[in-house]
Image (cartoon, rainbow, N blue to C red; front, side, top):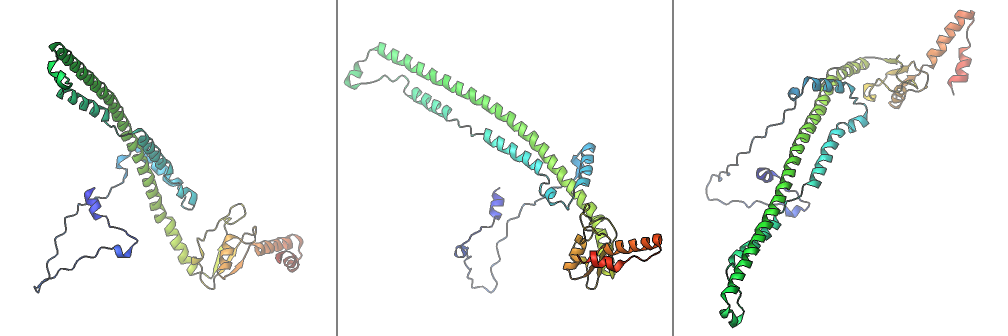
Length: 309
């Protein structure tokens, strides 16, 4: 701890309070060699792997990693909170139960016993009359001193026995603390390993797919979404952000409900030309109408009435 304290920088809000080293003056041509810095202890990083886990625990980690959704900010904020709460609540409980075991009662009893032993056998003297105390009074005083010393010894024994019981309870509590801390440490380790596994998977798969997607969009003149992602019942967008767009790109979506999906809104805000799925719906209907009736469907009238709303 002392080594760490020596390495701790001093922070201050007062610019004038900063320490200024006194320059060293010398008459020699060569500057004085700086003092050798003390060797710093090597700090070894903690290696977290699944070597401490059982096969069942490894399976739990693998299954849990698949459930992690990085797009869910609430999940990410709450990640591992359960284990942290367990550590915090137990630590608080332990601090509330542990108290400094002051041996003041024993110290007071020992001091009293020492005083009794120092005055043991010394008869009380009251003025000149003390010189004429009888032997009987001296014997009674000696017996009284013995009784006082015995009481103090018994008091010390009783207090020490009480402290022994308290210390035994503390030992049991510290044993429990060690077991629970071991449990919580393993639980936190499992959270960390699950998070690492999920990140490794995303880097190898999702990020690689997104990199390919960016390259494809960069070479395209038309970006067309033909998936149901973006519908009223399936909200979302397969393009992460507008950085995937480039000037001159036309963005179309076959979805017509809602009329402007998240993809189209993002493209419109980026200044690109957009088309929703209403035109596809219209001309599909027109082709079917002509196929069934042999007549042309009035598409212009329909666009005038419904598309400009």
